[in-house]
Length: 364
Image (tube, rainbow, N blue to C red):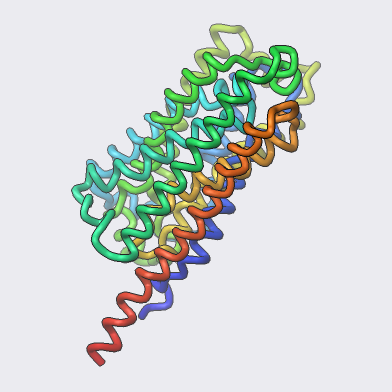
């Protein structure tokens, strides 16, 4: 077997988990941005996270990036771009979701919907429904997805229980603009639309093949970078246009040269948020090759890890303080199931890895 295409499912699980960690903490640097409107720091975040960082990494790891994009099928490029734009629409409300529900509950609900939609729909749309079942590896992968979803549901139930138990004063202390109704609407819309990222990142197989075959070739591990660049460009278009519109509408264009604001610090922290955010999808595309035929579980693992770490972060920030033992029990059980889904995914990858190995021994 070519070492460049060798699979290592446990490594893939670790990479997806690191991506989930990035997805859970990216919002924290925004807390250091001072005296800027939301649209101003979101614009800087978008420029770094959707353009500068992924493009710099792609040029570093994919020496044939320009040639690949020139030779790529136009319909595939358009599909990836439009899926990224769909994510961009959902991503604009991601911040509202966190603002109204807090880091822990907001990301749990948003990522949960994103996980279910982004994991199960791509193989159905591509006509690969059979790949979800039929073999021990596929069955284990599907089990991992459902365990992950069960964990997400329990975390969501814990959030609803928290809503009933805590007084408005306590809620506002943990999350300044807490609003369960507004947060649920934002999470539902954002979670479903944000699954466009999964569709786009998994929608460029011919682009990845070109990356691995067009001289000077890109390694198998990094062959997804050209796809990532196109998808994120679609997201950048939506985010940048919306932020610019708000800058004009709210007369906040002056933020970028505002003498009373710490300009350098704001750019650094907003840019850092973008770089951390982008890291989760870099992990997603580099973790896929390590998973082999069970790579489709990567999205569920990424979202599960993001929920796990965001819930732990929410606990650390005091968002669950004052809740009952029942509520904390639901949260704990949900987190255990999320961890279990990662273990199951690793096992499914090992099963898929063992099958071809057994076939080789039989024919030798």
